[in-house]
Amino acid sequence: MKFKIAKKHTSRFIINCGILFFAFSSFAQEKKKETPVTVKDSTDQAIHYYPQRYGLRVGADLFRITRSMYDKTYQGFEVFGDYRLTKNWYAVAELGHDKMTRDESSYGFTTNGNYIRLGGDYNLHQNWMDREDMISVGFRYGMAAFSQTLNWYQPYTTNPYFPKERVDINKKQSGLSAHWVEFVVGIKTRVFSNVFMGFTMRLNGLISQTQPDDFENLYIPGYNKKHSGAIGVGFNYTVSYFFPLYKSKKDKFVIPTEEAKFDLEGNAIEQSEDLKMIQENKKKTAK
Image (tube, rainbow, N blue to C red; front, side):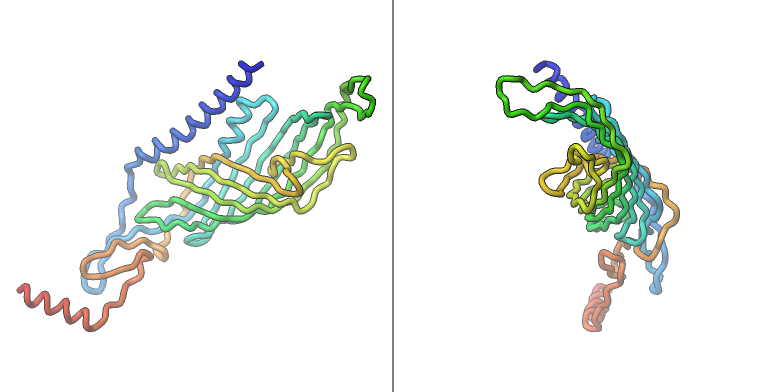
């Protein structure tokens, strides 16, 4: 038994390390850069800038996929998509399925159902040139429809002379639902031209739920395990592909030139008359 448990945890560790190694090695190997656009300003000086790409990114949760491989008590998947609305805001939708079998001290149950989460992410990271990485905070509203099956239970007794006998019942109750909200923080980095990898951490707050008659919901699809009160937590490894639809010059990243000064957002910095006069005198002196 100890050997089987050790083997299970070893396999899980190897899979997770492989995912992280792939992410970091791919990031280190990225060499391709988008060619900047070159234009002329009013003084006929060349200005280089990188337009911002807008489009749809779709992906999957690697954590749920790999867990389905090594954990016999779980089966599930999650796919998601986000669409860039502005320079920093992204609309997000997540759809998935969870089936979890758990054994507690006095009963065992199986949760099986689907879920959807809707919300948005705000990118706090200031990218340089053509980078499209994210350090984000966001929110989700989640909904789940599922069933609970009571697989077995042990009758309650206060008599210590008679051992508790396990009763296999397999009683299923369908038509259950739950609603919750989530606070999400995450990181995404571009490892190839349009391929992104990252992770998210979630803090969930349950709003409402319907429960079986015989026991409470301890696990809800998409919400994960319900801890004390109405609090839950979640974690995701993600891989996604970006489908660019168009480029915007409005939020472009500008590379400063010697004659024209720009801030990090590409806005021209006004120079005072005294500074302009000093620069002109320097040019005359140099001649």
